[in-house]
Image (cartoon, rainbow, N blue to C red; front, side):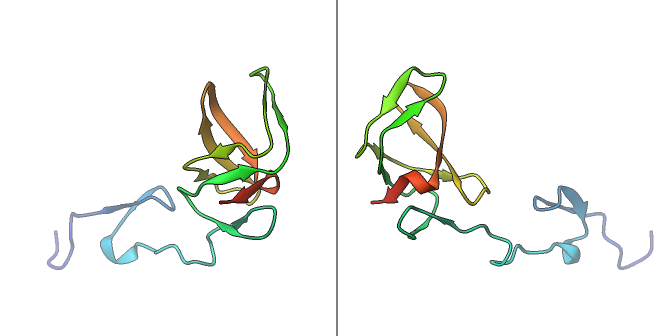
Length: 102
């Protein structure tokens, strides 16, 4: 091994590869997906949202009523989908056009 070389590598989560410490690229804000609710408010992880219309949940045999509060949402990377939890429904994904930020 020559002097100046390092055996240390860093795992870059953005690319999924092991790279030298100087080669790690930082994610810029241009790459981030902006998710907006029905009235144009910017949504972020952990926000609370309210449903703006009744929604039938496929596979659950349940209808979420207008005005239902959904706590602690997560962004999925898609500009129109948010991941959330609700009592009795696992893996609930809602379209951003049907919610309003609280």
